[in-house]
Image (cartoon, rainbow, N blue to C red; front, side, top):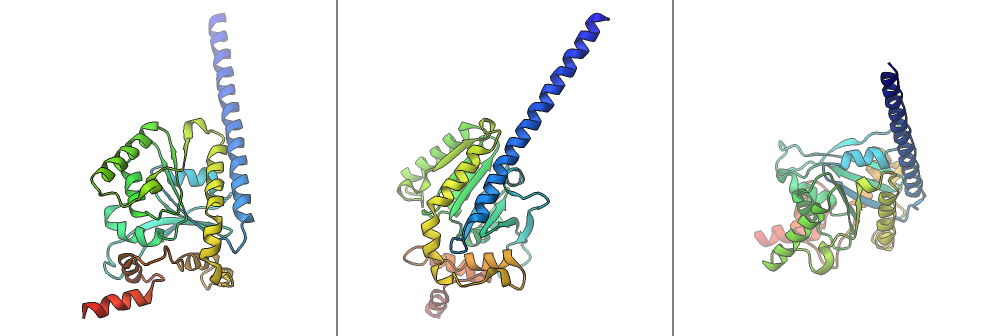
Length: 279
C-alpha cells in the first residue's frame, strides 16, 4: 500500500510540474505575442508592410505569435479571369499597417496567383515542421524578390541543409533565378529551442526594420491614401495600397500580365504594349 501511495504521489507531482511548465511556457509565449502585436501597431502609416508566411506550421505560428485574442485568420480567395473555376484560397490578417498573407502550402495550380499576390511582400517567412524543403524552395523560387529577407522557423536543421543543397545545385545548372546572396536565409530559428517565442519575434522585428526604408520609399507617393476609409474596411484598403508597389528599376512583363489577369494593380503601359505588339 505504501508503495502504491508513493507511486501515486510521484505521479501527481509529475503532472503538477508538467502543468506548471506548460502554464509558464504559455505565459512566456503570450508575452512574446503581446510584444510583437504592440510593435506592429506602433509602425506609422508611412511604413506599410506585407509579410508572406508559408509552410505546414504557418497557421499555427500565426495563432501562437500574431493573432490578437479573439481574432482569427480570414480566408482570402486569389481570383483570376483566366481560370475562374480554379479556386485558390489562402488566408490573411492585418495588424495596424502590416498585412499577413498566409498559406500552409503553395499548390502548383495556384503558383501564378501566389506570385502576383506575394510580389509586394517585403518580408518572407517559412514556418515548417520536418525536413522536407520542397515547399520552402518553391516559395523562394516564386516569391523571388531579392530585397525581401527570408526567415525560416524550423524543427530540423536538415530543412536548411536541404534548401541550401537545392539552391547550390540549381545555381550550378544556371537554373537558379536568385542571383548572388538572394537565395540565402537571412534568419533562422529552431522552434523547439524557442518555447517562449522571443527569438521568433526578434526575427520578425529585425526583418521589418531591415525593410523599413524600402517600404517608406516604395509607398511615399501613396501616403495620403486613407486605407481606413476603404468601402470594405481597413484590411482591404491596406491590401489595395500594398499592391500599388512597383518593384525594381524595370518591369517584369510576365508578372504584370499575371496581375492584369487577376484584376490587381498593374503597369497598364506594359500590358498595353504587350497586346499591341501581338497585333
